[in-house]
Image (cartoon, rainbow, N blue to C red; front, side, top):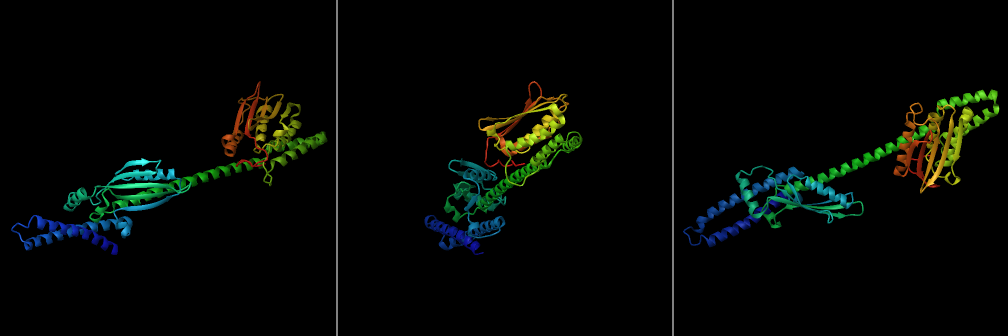
Amino acid sequence: MISSTFHFGRLLAAWLVVYIAFCIFLVESIFEHTEFGERDLGGYFVLLGFVLGLWVLSGVFSHIRRVRLVSGAVNSSTLSNRQRRQIEIPFEAGEAFDLIDAAIRELPGAVISESARDSLQVRAKVARIDPYGNSERGEGRVSNWALDHFGSRRNQILATVTPNGDEAGSVTLICEPEGAAWTDWFLVDHGTNLENAEAIVRAITRRVAERRRGEKARVRQTATEKELTVAKLNLLHAQVEPHFLYNTLASAQVLTRTDPARADEMLGNLIQYLRHSLPRTEDAPSTIGEELERARAYLDILKIRMGPRLQLQVDIPDALRGVLFPTMMLQTLVENAIKHGLEPKPGGGTVWILARQVDNAVAVTVADDGRGFTAEGGGTGVGLRNVRERLRLAYGSAASFSIVANFPSGVAATITVPNAVNSTVPEGVHHA
């Protein structure tokens, strides 16, 4: 109430001073030699002053009413024609500039007069819309005449971004009439600059919230992908193919009656295979050497079952056996070579396991001379898709997987990973 009274009193006093000066000038310059006396003119001056006071009162009342509707509070700050805001944006200065620039452009009737990203400043002109739509009424005509002669029909906005560290920007926002500051003593903006300032703050808040929601969604998606990868990996760790285990135990049972020494060898290989396949509790990465031991145990079991139909050749330098390597991937390639390449082929064949260094990476290849890419020899491809997805999540673009036809027959699959020895495993790579 005090703020409203003071605001009205200030405007009325300013108009009163101008009106008294006008009356004095009128009396001394124009009417001093006429037949009208001061008493005759006094009545007219009082009446005109009363009308002027009513006009000022109606304008101030409308202004206060609109400010209350826009902000919900009436005080010296909200009643002012010129609004200033200090906004802290939790983004670096360039992103903060983009936010404020976009927010100003979305204002109805806004025209950007200058948008300088290097100096981090935005200047704009905004058409002042009559909130009451009374331009055809007398009050509107008087107000428009006052704006045309003393003020402006437009507001203006100046936004300056100040860098506040590497990850934050501070925005100084000024919304004001286009006219000179002295016009504030005579004219009101009906809360239009307050409305512009509040709209820009809301737009920035909304955009920051959208950015935060997007970041949280990406974090949740990444976490979900990692959890899915870990779940798939744990499934691979715990999974021992029922048919393979059943056939191995059945073969060992038969060999205990016919060839106990070979049965003992097969069971020893099965124990070795299971030891490498079951999850371990220690937080240690797997290596090419450890994965090779798992694959050897698997192939040694199959060699007892398949006999001379399966041959194995390994060429992995000792210097590369300590290179970090994702668990179960080599095993997956070996199993594919046996199931889809050699087992369906009459007479069997050979499996090659090779490793070589290529620049700062290591390429591990599993090749066979089996049936190759044929309808009879192909599988569902789930295992190979899993290899590709795990490599992507673990290494990004630093790792690759390729599978090509081998010459003269068969398939060669190659996994290429960074050459990392005795260092932290990339995120997503886990031990067996």
